[in-house]
Length: 463
Picture 1: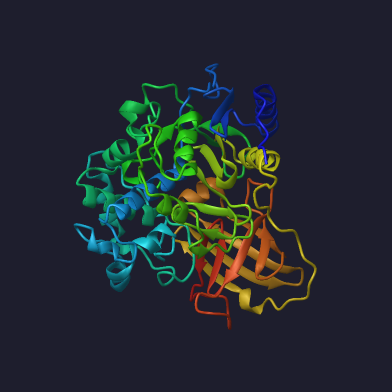
Picture 2: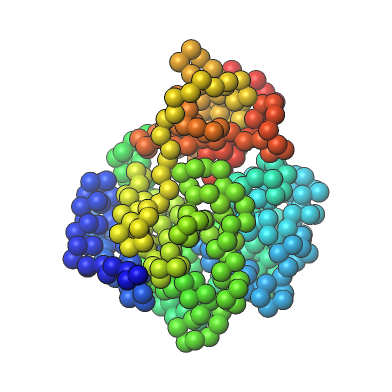
């Protein structure tokens, strides 16, 4: 079957229209079809200026970086230097320390790749700029709470990927930044990709934008362009153009080949990265997770990753059987312009779009197992209570959560299985929330999963 080509003029008009409709200050998007790359850009680099976004502008890749970090780990596996079934502490000096010492001793490399290590995944990032930055952030994890036993459920973990970044450093004897440069950026010929601000700032930059106040749709430029170097492996510092991101995608579509013909990863390993390794409970996000990749669809296989940091949002998807990759990089896309554009392009090029959030389902259900308090972190607690109208979720927030959401309550509308829909301001589209039992069904739900994270049930009673 012949894959349709992308008309550049129509592509440009579509991006212009969507960015205008969603109020996105600046964005760029790219499509790779059968080896041919088309990139377009729109808007301005920063509100209050007239500097345009161009196809040469660099954006933060945010958590798409995790696929790069996973690729480095799998290169080391190919070289016989790392075993995915081994405890990560087999490779770390100094060793990983956690609140649960047994987990620190036994959690495996593979469990970290699949976001199933179980320890809190969104730890604060110390602002360390020296070459030992990743080592320092991993040392700071000694007090991280355990959310579930390793391997039990999927829960998205920035912390886990920083530990993998430290593994790369210990095995290669270099910094994560240097390993990324010598093992991926240079072999792939990515001339506009970098992790260090002194390199990135020589290129045209797009500045991120965030809500001017909790729950607001008005945007303001960020005051800090990127995250601390400590968060490099999980997605705080890597910046690239859409063309460079699609060149990285092409390397995966071609199962580990560089443009020179050199093999950066074995064919078997590249393909196994795209296989399901753990179920992902959010029905709006795809059914499973691979090694680094989110499995968006099983048939046809669609893999990808999303990212959001410092007021910038990114989305990359690949359809390996069709030789297609699509990316969108945006500033201040708080309502999902990128998802809409990617899904439209996938439907046209591959025949299917991204997963969608399920709709409400009419059913009489017993809500007793779902009532209780679920603690996402020290910054967010969710009290789920039953009222005559149905379930209500009340969020109590502080810190970064309060900066974006503030405290709020939302009805929970049944959507089938153990999934409900709720609203999280300022986003107006419903968000899925799924109740889980980490040790098998029966009794009160042990966890509440939403936005790819799980919150364990707290012993405290709801207010």
